[in-house]
Length: 293
Image 1: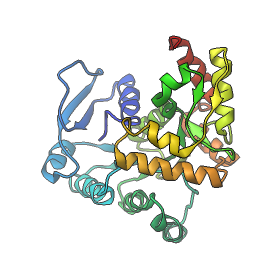
Image 2: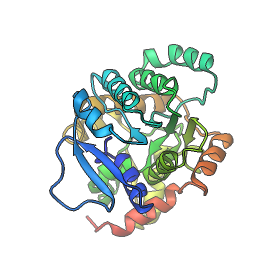
Image 3: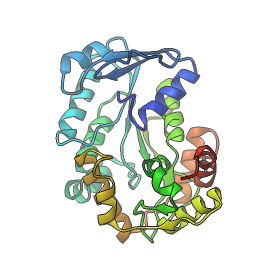
């Protein structure tokens, strides 16, 4: 589910590369060419019948809930449809948070954190997945490298406007999320549980990201971390709900350092079977494809 989103398309890429037969749930199937082994099927999270058709005969299912007012209800609908269809493994992309292993510890964590933040609906869906009994795997990715791609014009002009703040937050490549999800979907022997997905730099600040871009582009790139200017900039680039959620996350980053722990990096590396991609390498790849402003 969500094969055209930031994460979903990387999951499809990774699965296709491994020769897996995949169904991708989309509102309207594309008339164009698809990745090998990928079949698009029409459906909607709000349409239970379409979910049941799409999930019929499926061994493992991946989903991520959208930035939506009914996020929790839509997530619940998918979980229930998957269980009714006999799906053997559910893989859910949640949000980066403390890796709480026990059921009681997770319940206390969700009560303390999830119900007072915009992460509440996603964490409650995560709880459903954890309790599903369908060999659940929860992926907990940190901030995406690919969020930078919303600002290519600004980067060409020498400005990095993503308000990551001065305290620092961990960041991860969406391609690593796709590779991790593909393993979880295809390797049913992988232990159920929650897996943090983090990048190798414990945390990156906004100025540090701007400096990485400056080195890759060979010219000055200034950091602009003003949250109000960011909101105005993305007003026509993001749906309003997504924009509001991102804004709250960046507000959190301005107050709290969100750094990955060595144990989380070790778990990410073990899940991938290799070290995760570095932000500096991602930026170098993307910068090489950019034309000057």
